[in-house]
Length: 305
Image (cartoon, rainbow, N blue to C red):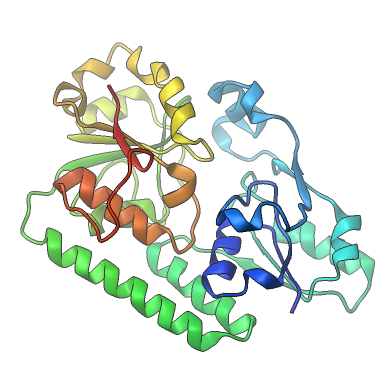
């Protein structure tokens, strides 16, 4: 089977299911696992270079506070046709995060009437993410493998909940964009709960919007985790002055007690793939000092100093 993944999380899933060798196309942001980066052709490109813009400029470029801009991705329809995929994995959850289902469907429909099967993944919650793994497994003919993988992930989450049971539950603000201030929704509040925390500013499954600084101040988080969408930890640290320079920053309990953490957003929180389970385990380490089977690295979680 020939598979094109137009979503980094879908690439994670395909490889997790043992089908990485059947990937014939990916996005320019599919960077995990590393072995897909070199040999798998790239069928998308960015409308602009995020590295050349500030967080505020990126937000405005993709639609500002309404978050309703066109996708950041351009699809190379000619290359997609040349790759002759049997299945194309995409999404329609966020119009600025990946090529949309509509764009892909139109591209393959125009090509001919017998094009590839286009699968749109729409997870909003943690159970949805696991259900997507099952669905992709079924579509790709490895339903048994997917069921076993999901079972293992569910067991890890159950073990994590057991390890944090009865502990104090710190109030946690997860920030997925620095300017404007944007709380992390969808599956992240559930990751926080699994890790023994109480999520603030967003509910499970919620597609969030920017908040005023007064809202963060009023929420009085005991822990702040910074996991900007698409930013590696190094860039988050480099742009932390967008937060630390605000007059209300020093009044947050989390800041006063040194509980502000930089996490790897793209790896464990922004993408609804198998690694969200590791993300919950990292959060348990941050909140309660619980060490998972594979120790947490400085790249995965570091205090903002």
